[in-house]
Amino acid sequence: MNKNVYTLYLVTDRELMSCDTIEQSVEQAITGGATVVQLREKNATSREFYELAVRVKRITEPCQVPLIINDRIDICLAAGADGVHLGQKDIPCDAARRILGSEKIIGVSAATPEEAAKAQRDGADYLGVGAVFSTSTKTDTRPVTLEIIRKIRAAVTIPFVVIGGINSENIGILKGLGINGAAVVSAVVAQPDIEAAARKMRAAVEEII
Amino acid sequence: MNKNVYTLYLVTDRELMSCDTIEQSVEQAITGGATVVQLREKNATSREFYELAVRVKRITEPCQVPLIINDRIDICLAAGADGVHLGQKDIPCDAARRILGSEKIIGVSAATPEEAAKAQRDGADYLGVGAVFSTSTKTDTRPVTLEIIRKIRAAVTIPFVVIGGINSENIGILKGLGINGAAVVSAVVAQPDIEAAARKMRAAVEEII
Image 1 (cartoon, rainbow over the protein chains, first blue to last red):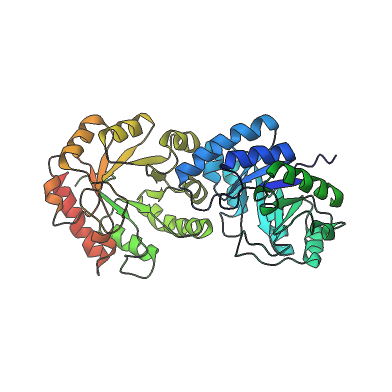
Image 2: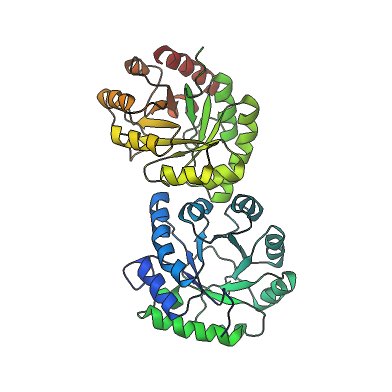
């Protein structure tokens, strides 16, 4: 089994999840094999996001699964999460690194080799590369081709996960590109049996990394 | 002249301002007598908010006017601002204090003596008390009566500013309540001459504190 922490990168989604609470979706996905969890909240108040992060941290920590907070460095610090994921419209990576120090994980979304190389220079620990396939989860994504993934792999030495519409059916095409894992939303949290979906997805990712 | 830093507390508003940029509104308000500036952005991305904060800090710092960031502790840290203002739906004051240390200013919105006392216990440096008058700037405010302001004054020793629909015409009624300043949005930034409006408002506040 691959020990890479990025193998199955779960991104939460309140609207898409098949269960009642974010906590349930995270717990079931980890049982099924998720290796890292990103908490993404689009409409929560800062207080709600903070309190949710505190609750989810109680689930991820005993499992030694890193908890990553989308965008909000302050929520990460306040809740004692393990890191943040920054899009190109979030606080710049170098500024985030100054705030977070060297211990916290910082991931950056990249859709071009230039963005990838800059993120690595600015102190990113990993990249989220996509959108690989079209996705209903995010509407503002830019398409990333296999050629771009190859160029990003050549441009950086840090690990990266691919993201965007990935499921156990379509992931095969990504084999041999040197990717370190896959980030999934719908393919896990929107399935009727989240644990089984995570298990299936984990096996599918292990085949191609 | 009153040396209290909270005397004329300017809150920015992109939609209401009479000039082209937030920077212009801040510069003109400071020239007119604003003693502290809170940057409030409702719809900006984190990147936009951060970059704006960096630009505004270049205006406030040479004037020794503290720059307070609404809600976002991470933007405060990344931009080197002087503090944050936290509503009751933002990250709790005690958690914010742990992140920010003792040097940064933390303000908390309070509409009851209980919220005020809790904020002081949790490490707040000042309070924003309101809404004193009805206001079009915020729709989710709770009304605060003169009796509540008296009770809040009795409940805490830290300074507080009143907020909510305050202008140079209606502020007189707040005299003798032990308030330390007034926070204004429309009464300054929405006026055709922001500098003159700030000057007028500053004089009106000096009369009642």
